Length: 446
Image (cartoon, rainbow, N blue to C red):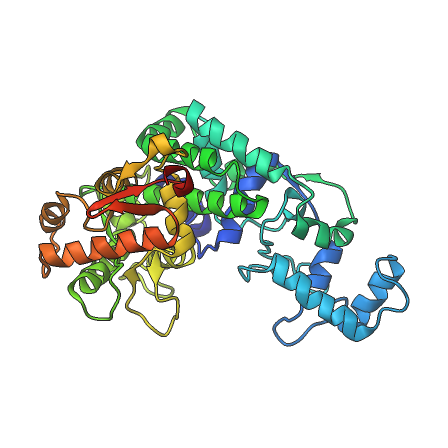
């Protein structure tokens, strides 16, 4: 086997996918392509939506070329001017390139990773998979259980909506070409290996609680708008992937917890411990292949074979890609802050949309399903390994796992700030002093 093949084998045997620097758009495309097995070329969309490229736009992508193409395809009236077309291109770019995951994909450029912000199945591209088949793995595992299949059915219904506002906006640019069979499963098997039923079932069993939470999320999203359903579903799926990633990497230790800071400030005790928690999780991922090798997880030891040795060196392995995969995923799915690359020290802090998705995964949708705040904190820990300080056992759990430098009052302040965040998102009310009730539809509780 070549070194590239050895690496792919190691990725496959470790996680079932290749840990790349992945954005939500990459994952969403892989997941929905796995569901539909259909992709499109979308040449006109690509040429209109790409408004900048390294060393400038080249033939077929220039302003003049786009104007001529739109006119020749009768997509604009003759009276439409060049400045108006450029304004249109900026607007289209804003719709399909929210994650900055789109690149020029046609001649004179070479095809490479290119994923549009998912608004419907019509924008799924046939470019090389830039999620390392992570979306395919999640879809495959969910398909192994009845609960998971409920999630996939909801995803298919959401993906099948073809008349959303944004979809209609870009629809004139999608007229070129018919759907092509993606052959994603065959490509995955050829490049990485065949996922055996026993392995799929084992992962499904490990992730049963998270899959059940996804089903609850889908149930709560029924009355949401189309694009909010897509966004929260993708965030929920990424939470599932993150839980699986951390659980698999922590082969030698009890499953790590995630301490989220809601108090704020730059140097408080909870912030410091949340930074420590982030660093430990990153290190856990960085050592994953060594630990898995020690546990006899690989058919051929990639450490012993120097598969990941630094270029031109044989004395040091390079697993930065694992840390980058975790760090990029945590930032982009709304688990970590600050996003600025100039600030190397990150901490765990849930962003509003991600928090809502997680809450919708553990809450019912009517007044009878209202849950006390402490029970919500228990559910977040039991399902997503999230700690905010609102459970009676949080202090002991944190200290058992080696987190110190805070007291009960610090945890209480963090829990109180978390409760206030839930109230601001209309996910909680305080009908009387000390009684906080949470629900996915707080209006029903009131």
